[in-house]
Image (cartoon, rainbow, N blue to C red; front, side, top):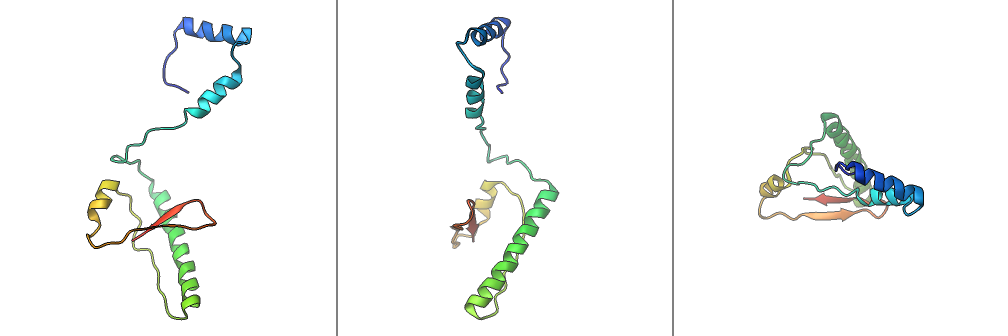
Length: 119
């Protein structure tokens, strides 16, 4: 819902529109569904809790174990993939921390809807 405060006249007009049939309750639901977009400030990103970071780290460790097994079987050689770190930093700081001669790749696995970045 909106954070605006309605005056008594506006409330009366909405109630009379509902009772006369000019507007329906479905119109309000549709309006509420369309207003679910929130602006997001990437300079001051919302923080994840330590528990959420820990869960993300475990998820990536399991993924790296699966990739290690897969690549070792496919390439028939020893492959070691591990998680270096899982940190939350602002995007601008991340971009400044990347060395100049770095290749950034965005990967998309066809079974998942998410995209991944690989440095």
